[in-house]
Image (cartoon, rainbow, N blue to C red; front, side, top):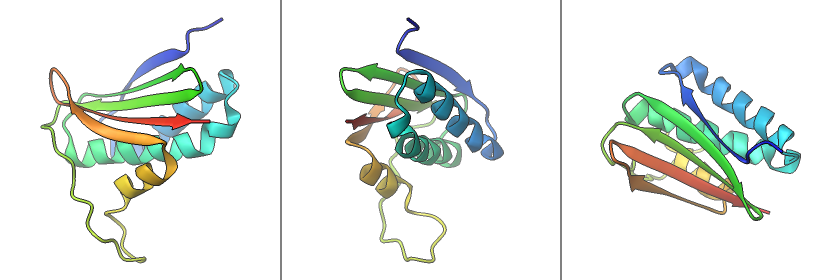
Length: 125
């Protein structure tokens, strides 16, 4: 049985957010967690986009399963910074990412890393 913990380096390219989604889809299918794919893709997409917008390369994505929870992390080498969650209008293009993460996850947070920060989430079933 393959390990239920994986990590990838992510490109420093805003056009590559779809790569993060592809990784999530492939891994969760392999792990038999198809019911989590849509939510996990959305969460990772938002966290990766925030890392690209507010962080500093290099970026990594980690996924793991512990018990009945999927855990994930997006790390970058930028300063520990959480963009403020300002009210977002319905037609606003930016400012909803962390609200989306909160809505789709069981929990999430930001922690300092040895260099930079780790933005993590859990999605339990």
